[in-house]
Every structure is written in C-alpha cells, then in structure tokens.
Image 1: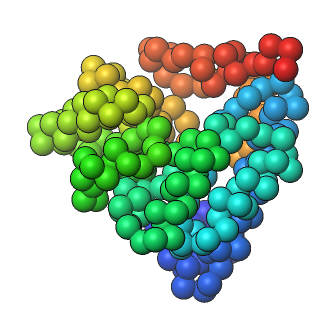
Image 2 (image 1 turned 45 degrees about the vertical axis):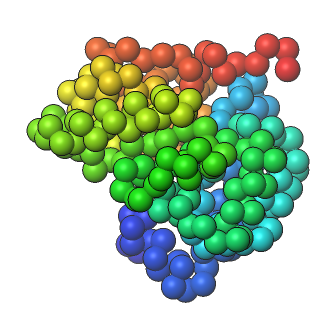
Length: 232
C-alpha cells in the first residue's frame, strides 16, 4: 500500500495503463451521486471535476455527463468541468466540438492552472468558460516575488475584463490571502482553509454548520447557509 498518491504521479500512470477513460467516467458518476445526496439533504452544492486531455478527445464525453446529471436529477450549471489552460488551447476538431457541446448543455467551465500556458485573448473569448483559476505557482511566491504579484494581478484584471470569476488555488498563508483579496480575487482555495477531505467528512461539516479555518479571515457563508434550498 502506497497511501495517498499525488495527481502528478497517479494521472500519468493511469493514462499509460489505459485506465484514464474508465476512471474519468467513474469520477463523473460518483461526483453526481454525491451531489444528489447533498441535494436530498436540502443543499445545492456545486461539484467540480477535472477533465483530462484524453477525456476532451472523447466524442461522447458530454453525452456521458448529461446522462449522469439526468440520472441523479442535477442541473448542468451545478456541475463544473475544470480544464487546464494547456488542454483548453488544444484546437483539435474533437476538443472544439466538446467545448461547444459543454456550452450548449449549460455546464460551468473553469480554466485551471491559468498563467502556465499560451492562451490568446481571442481564444479565451471563444471558450465557454465561467472562471479562471490562478496557478498555484504564482500564489506560492506572492509574498516574496514582485513578478509573481504582477502576474497574479494581471490575471485577475484579465478575468474581470472578460467577465469571468477569478479563483486562486494553492493559498497556504494569510499573507497570500490578504494580497489576493486586495487584487480583487473572487474566491480562494488551499490548505489555509482546509486540506482535502472525503465526501463523508464534508457532509459532517455541513451537518455541524461549521467551516473550520483561521478565525481572522473573512469567511462567507456561500458554501453553507446560502446553499440551503427554499422549498425546492
């Protein structure tokens, strides 16, 4: 037993073994199942799934997502497909068609690891994205690098100009948090708030009505109180 295996190790191994397609479909199905269980509790939590380069080349990817959503009674705008910038910029016919089908279905699309690829403004405008996620490499150096601060601030400004929500990933210190809030970043994620937890642990946190984290930070209730349904 190797315990927890980092995605950077696990994903290439799964791809080389030809298992990525099967695993990707299982993750989509399981995410929809968990989201449906939360909805049954009176919550409408958004779930996000990373979509790999191989999955973007599957002609029936969006059909599979649509079937899972219908099977579990979920709305497409509550399902986020996180696609890395490098994958999003692949201009193959299949990937382009997949993006168009995501747009038609009404899925919430997030461009992950932004700032590490080679996007053009024209390409970004054409993508059916709702948000950009600032790559953790820039967040890690925010407190020590003027270049990192300049790049992060530029990404936030770019996202705002394109009417996209901007999310910073890999936030681990209060200093990083404060700098990103000053830049106008919409959402933050990282170990400062929580390490990865299971769906069962998340359910327990919801039931307890608490979100553990640094008390000095201005947490909103967006993941908890405002997700409760009103007679739906």
